[in-house]
Image 1 (cartoon, rainbow, N blue to C red):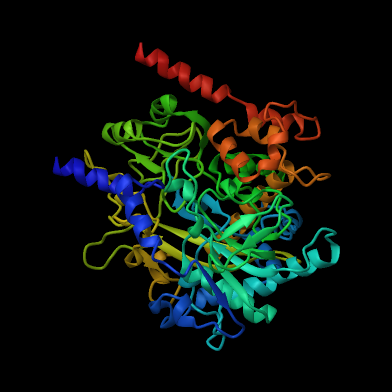
Image 2: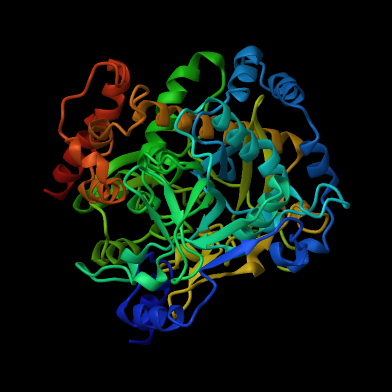
Length: 576
């Protein structure tokens, strides 16, 4: 019983939903709060409030400093020198791609190798509201704002100025705001930086997903709601329950949990990043996998591609065991729309598979990916079989740990540029052999975010590794590896932006709901999108597609279920 209780607690910490006790604690805590909205004035930025203490006392590693000062042309020249099959003109053009929607992103990458020692930086996922600023040592000792201000000056401010000049329905009368649902340390840092750069007050406003805390049919508590959208697509905020709603002309979004159920896709208020980027792959692992496949099809003749694990999309819960068996009994199963490590399950034995199958899940579809473990216990796959390089072995116990690298990028007029980096290690060492009944998540899970007993978020910072003089050496990375990581991140981010361009009708500016439903046929997801963007209810998700929506070859790739049929037939025959 004790073991079952511990397992239950761990599952709840990794879940994006709250149990009844957590909901009660949440409302008890929230009802006494007065900080749902805070106003920041120019020059109010204080480093100690927006960085972890150990970051303020750290020094950037010389390799990392050198990397951040490389031009895009230098990176392309170096990469193509080491990879002569890559077309340098095509790579430079890809890295100078100027996005329309996804202007700020962060990819999580594994440093992996294969049986013959060929190393690679492998994309795990790409985030449209990435954390990382609070974990990034300053590039310059005299720059108090760090990369907070850099993102505002390079990306957010040019976006606003361009909209003021060229967007006919831009809201000229309105305030600036930062919307957030977690990570107040970084969200407030962006608010303070925005206030200084624009030389005007900026409002930091909590934009909570109350559907996680209310029962079906219940409405959000009015005193806790400080953000709303009008019917004409304008965001409004309220500082206190007694004050009037203020229109917002542009906002910085750090809303991570299902933003599409409360932030409309067709917002007139300018948003960095708009909601469509989350649907297209920034918070949708299923469409991200398709976006990578579609872009790789474009890139395959140029000698470089996005490196990703083998991925199966749109797998129903009942079919998950068949796909796990196909991958040799070891796989990663993911809720496509979760983040912060929630809804991710590593399966290496029958018990872990049974725990997954017996759990409650909010969505109809999963994705199943090859598991990256050690040389003796990674997934068996028809593609390249990878395993973790891991940290440098410790001096005393010779233990190595799985880690990932977060590479944050921002858009400029000359394409994407690296912005910040940090790393996270798993809590348990990486063994050569996996023992029977071992909890593989402790070995492979790197995310630092966990749910506390009262439903609030917490961060396990003891597993955070900085790119400073102390921690970076343990990663075993060199400048060439960082160049690979940036290239992979820029390509993955571009792929999702290209998917956004497919999903948004260029004439009306609205989401093509029928195309989304075709590429991502998940009824629960579509219901949430309609909840957040009521204007889409005039569209029918089963409306016929126009031939201009996707090329026939792209549509064939999106709808191809042949691998699924082959796997399920094999599993059925084996069971007989």
